[in-house]
Length: 442
Length: 181
Ligand code: FES
Ligand SMILES: [Fe+2]
Image 1 (cartoon, each protein chain N blue to C red):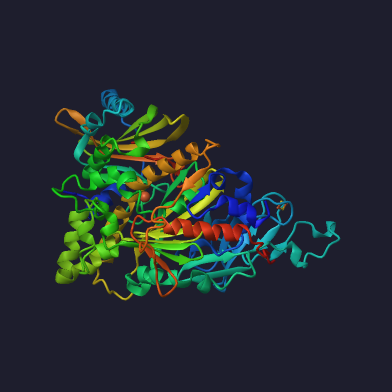
Image 2: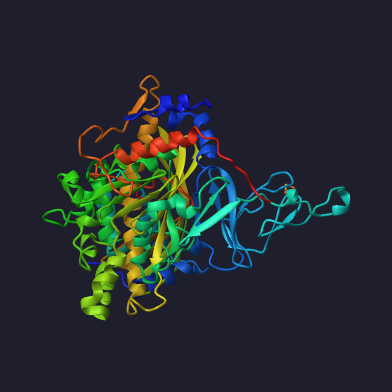
């Protein structure tokens, strides 16, 4: 299966073969040719704010410890003892200058360097040899707080890898005071299905009124006409001003902002009821008067889906991470974010904003994502039908004028178009057919 | 109308962060509380959600922290529902289009290790353990943990003011957490 003809046979212009979601050998290759070859999102800087903080993560299936050393430099260490292979760090986060393996006591600095081993006189080797240091991801870079790593020495810089998707990321951040957010725990979900089912869904505007029908009904149960939440998908979503855009390298963007009036407070008006809504909204209005709109909008879900291939989706106020665990098992973790207002731009309302924002962020994972995950699992079950080989993603294909080539090289299409999916599958095929130059440093 | 404000949160966090040792000695109170918890478990297993909601006070919270003892003012929860959102939750399950619960899970829960502690004049705090076996779409899964209830005696019965569900794996990735725990 090392030939590009093999992958040509699996990814067609209008459809993909079921085996890309079900075949364990293909999954294993993805762990090197996709997750080993491109920049993969690892963690957010606000999760390790202080010197010597660490958090565990994964790059594909590789267990990592993302550390911030005493000089503030971030490392992505393999969480694997050089001696016999045990995970050296068994807690999910903390603060530590060194890590001692619990099996035979080898100890490492949070830079990855071996500090020492018990009874070294029993060894003939020189422990200064770098081969005894922890392996680490050779290239770790941050983009405005988002930490990525890649094993591929030939990969472009992170900034070039992100390319044009940086613009929506910048806009997402810049609506916040100081242009930044902080992660505050997560709604953590898992499903028994392939990770690409979640990535295929990430900009899918076709499923919304069907998969999320119960959510739309719930959010609008007090309304005469549905105006809350994603009700702008009802009727004819392709005629609404929102759009889907493909940015290259597998990244895509669903921009629903054009559906919302461009005036402070308009976004907040789309929010259905949330715990604490009346009190904290009143408190913000009392403090800010006419200027309350901006603060309230920060508590509302930003209507975008910014998807960075292969494992990051910034949507609403969440940082969602797709973590493959096996060919048919995936974790999707919805990291919640809060506003920090060091310069006092929000006139002392930041606590009120966050009190609302934490509750608004619980809604979608509870009442929306669970239904998508149920559908992903049903796809995985359906794909057991092995003679029925094809999965179609040809919505919009061949309709003249529907998908537009923009001057910046991106593709734009109406909200329910599957062009983004066809496009990231092409990128998937290219990567799976290319040998990446993978290495670690020590 | 939501009653959740700074005072409500502060009281909630205070009530659920310290569990004193001295249990209530009065067997009548203990028995009354035990019956509330058992009835609640049964109504949920029977999917009698409206009857289950009737056990709750007009001002109530259903709270599933996302970290052990997590403060809802500082972080998101697996679920943090005031009365209105709890009614939302039931409404959604009843639409017939909540695909994560269509078809619905079958559940059975065992509630045990019930202890009742004094709280206020009419209020008590109750701690209990639970095992919840769920079957859906051909697969079984097990949920487990402990609950804290704040009950208040009003109009001849104990109402549930707060129920905190502490899953032992609350900070891990959960598969289909769409049932009422
Ligand atoms: S495996 Fe770590 S010290 Fe032996
Ligand atoms: Fe969805």
